[in-house]
Length: 457
Image 1: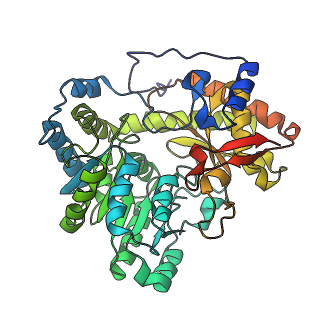
Image 2 (image 1 turned 30 degrees about the vertical axis):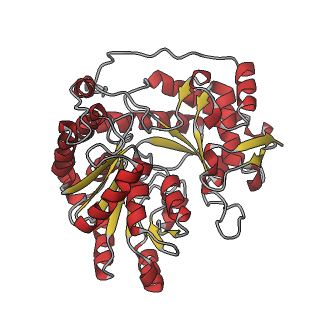
Image 3 (image 1 turned 90 degrees about the vertical axis):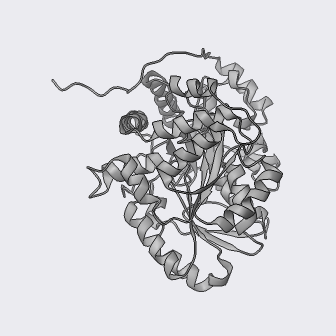
């Protein structure tokens, strides 16, 4: 008999979590104005709101924290992180930030101006928010297959080369750079192929445009290249990552994802001009250039976490858990974005609550029902997250309405995934009993999903 698959770690410390009653959850979500972000953590049984900074760090990462150098300037922990980034990505210039959106703010303050157009593959919420906050425009050039949830294209995160070329030809003077997000979070944690990255780079070189990678889940993307793309089966994750970043102009990074850390981020670039200008912004908004809003202990933990994220067995364990949940949902007939992505499962709200009017926030409605049913907190990736059009102020209704169930790294067992699966099954079985959604009673002008207040219709 073949030895079955198992995780490449053992549990060393635990945190208790508690079940609650349906009546408690109904009260708590109402008190939270039906915004899952407003729930207290002890009101949640299984928290799949995000995989950002919510995972479990290793004993070696905690050892690095004990060794953290908290010097204001010239910290040895900074130089350890700098060397790690050089070894993995081969960038000479690097600035630490408190997290990924801090990296976006610093870099975009340098290279994004009013009325610019930034083409990419489904910019995620804070990326789009930082672009639109500067009165610029994010243009989605993702392939059409990404919006067909049952399509099994293994690289649904890809940029459509024709869309990108048309955008560059039509708006060349307004485009300062092109951005690739790996993996493509907004369409289901879907990877971008190596071939697509190379073809995009070829086009950007043709138009003399820099190429920047939003790298939050770079290691998961490399994992999918290894197991799905011809020619990469026998290459290591290290080799694949080096190939991804070859000749790339810059990157933003949230260390809270594939940095396996609870806080932190950075920008890295080959361009000294970008670095010099960004250093000024970094000092103003983040901190001195050798800490950038991070403690020494956190820089040490991220350096170690980045190295751990490159381990194939770790990546296999992580992605296998998402597959496990997907297989359970397949058994129950619950629809989700296919094929399975790396960090989360994206439940297709349109296929479950498509009988509700779109303006009743169907993905948010589904997310609330999942919480009430099983104490499982996911997040809406739909109309709320899309924000209003900055010009017309009308709601933007995206092609996809998802509830994202993001699985924190090394934190939950497959027994927890069974609870999640049965929760979804129960909702799916009674989906036609859900006959109304929600309306907005209060919202912020940008990134509204974090603080929105709703009312049940």
